[in-house]
Image 1: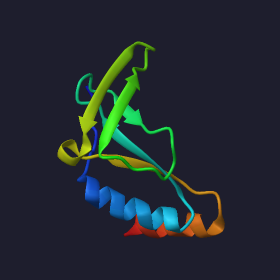
Image 2: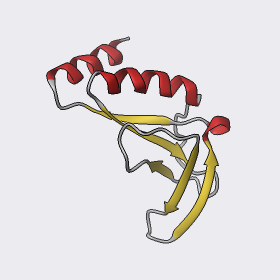
Image 3: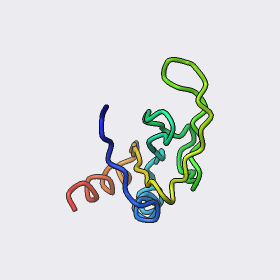
Image 4: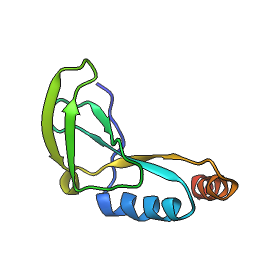
Length: 94
């Protein structure tokens, strides 16, 4: 099974908030505490402390709620504007 890099929720939120303010779209990611699948939130720039894994990759239900304050999380960032791309590039170099 793949080992994903999850970091403390507050640390991720702080960086993600900076990138979102610069125009990036940020999608919260976490590892499901029940089935171990990687979950990506459907809504950009929306953060939660409780990650709900509705459906597994194979289409079967999971339904588990993972406490991200305990397990941590990560994020996926996309950038479409020149300002957002510059902010993301600065972050990746730091």
